[in-house]
Structure formats: structure tokens, C-alpha cells
Image 1 (cartoon, rainbow, N blue to C red):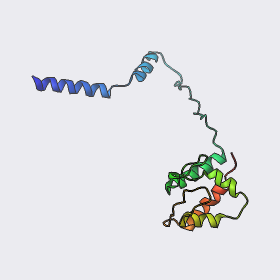
Image 2 (image 1 turned 90 degrees about the vertical axis):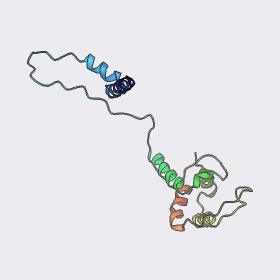
Image 3 (image 1 turned 120 degrees about the horizontal axis):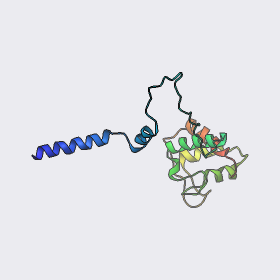
Image 4 (image 1 turned 180 degrees about the vertical axis):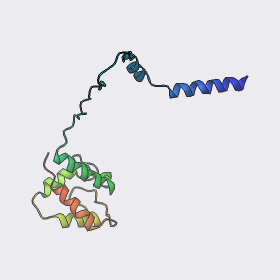
Length: 148
């Protein structure tokens, strides 16, 4: 008897899980049943408008998103952010401080070797596992960030 009740319960759960949702049932009920009249052409359902986004993706936003992904992958966001000061300065602050100056090589060296005293008492941690080839284009992109 207990086994039969268990099987019936499992079957009920299975049927409930496999049955269409309420939305699908509502759509099925809203569509009239086919009639025996001949139809000359099949009726197409109305086309849905393409989805739109509230966020306007600009070239600057796309570039910033790609830069953030690269910086995140190598761990830079542990201490830095694009617009906010964390342990280290924001990337926009760095871009504003060094705008127009040829400092890419110097900053790449500071990232690899570490350093301190420029942005306050907390030193930049060294990152000897990163190469100049990887860092140079990233530093150039950071330095090219526009002011907010």
C-alpha cells in the first residue's frame, strides 16, 4: 500500500513538472479552436518588435567594458576601480594626473616592480608575473580614459 502511494505521488509530481505552465495554457485557451471552414492562406502570428535596451552602448562604453574585462582578469580590481578610489587610485585619476605625459613605460615599471609615495602611504604591490608586453597596451588605454 505504501509503495502504491509513493508511486502515485511520484507520478503526480512528474505530470505536474511536465505539464505546460499557466502562460502556455492561457495562450492555448485564447486561441479559438479550428473550424471546419476552408482557409485560403495560413494566418501568421504578429511579429514581435525587437528587444531594446535602456542602456545606450557607445564606443567609449564598449572600450571601457573591454578594458575592465582585461584588468579584472589579471586582478587589478582588487585595489583599483575605474571611477572610485579603493586601496589605490581610480584609473580616471591616474589618467587625469598623467594626461599628455609620456609615462607609460614608468607606470608599467611601477606595476611590475611595485612602488610608493605617489598616491599616499600605501605602496603599489609588485606584480613580477606580468610582462611589459601585456601591461603596455592596458596602461595606454587607462591613460586615454576621458575625464568624467
